[in-house]
Image 1 (cartoon, helix red, strand yellow):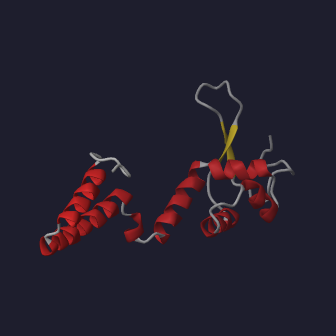
Image 2: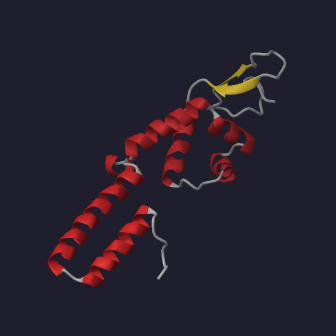
Amino acid sequence: MTTANDPAAPADSTAVATSSSDGRSPARKQLKKLTYTHEAMIDLILQAPTVKPAELAELFGYCEGWINRVLASDSFQARLAERKAQLVDPHITRSLNERLRGVAMQSMDIISEKLAAEQSAAYAIEALGLATVGMGAGRKGAR
């Protein structure tokens, strides 16, 4: 394990040693504050969400273990979530169910209007089939 005075520790390491509440486990490093390197990692993760810790380690010149500790830290995760929230459009964050419900309601209105105008038995049967499948009462593809 590296310490703040260890030459193997990253130059901008802002970790502080803490131990578990039971006092038996070895001290663990936790970030006490984020540096420009951490912010740069967040920028990169936001630009390329599929970037792997090994790639971050190579790009930033640290070992993969250090990168994994940083990525898992509460302060890093909190800052990453904060930055994501700043970038996301409120329309995108609406739940999928809410958006699908809106599409379904609009579709039902259109189908109802067309059914009233057409007065076609074939169209009524097709609309009924779509409605029952959508409600889970019918089976898709059954004829």
